[in-house]
Amino acid sequence: MTEFTEISAGGVVYRRIAARIEVAIAEQRDRITRQMTTRLPKGKIDSGESAEDAAVREVAEEIGLRARVVGALGTAEYEYADGSKRVSKQVHYFLMEWVPGESLELDGEMDRTYWCAIDEAAKKLTFEPEQRAIRWARERLGT
Image (cartoon, rainbow, N blue to C red; front, side, top):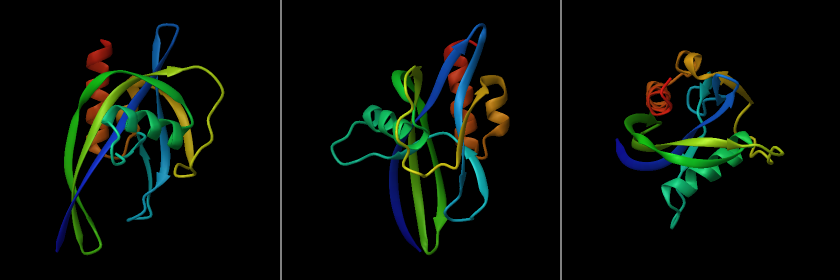
């Protein structure tokens, strides 16, 4: 089996509504399993791009929101199989505050995006590394 490495960046985008904190999550059909999944926006870091810039770009492209980086949350590492390839993946997650305004043009990767109470988000997300990113965000935000 051929081994590859991928380095990505993504964000936990949040907003405050009165005393409640909500995060943006999205549904997407997994390209490998074809199963519907719920996930955070993330994607590969382009050549010459910082992880922070990639996270801001991916949030804009995948869920159509402007957001500013508040700080780093942590890095999740995991492996997955893609046909005959074994991929070692690192994802740098950032806490990002939503910047209100018009929605941006989407890249079509996500099927549906919505706001969810941060206390419920980890239960809705399909993958453990993204659930962990929500836990990191909750710690950082003091919820």
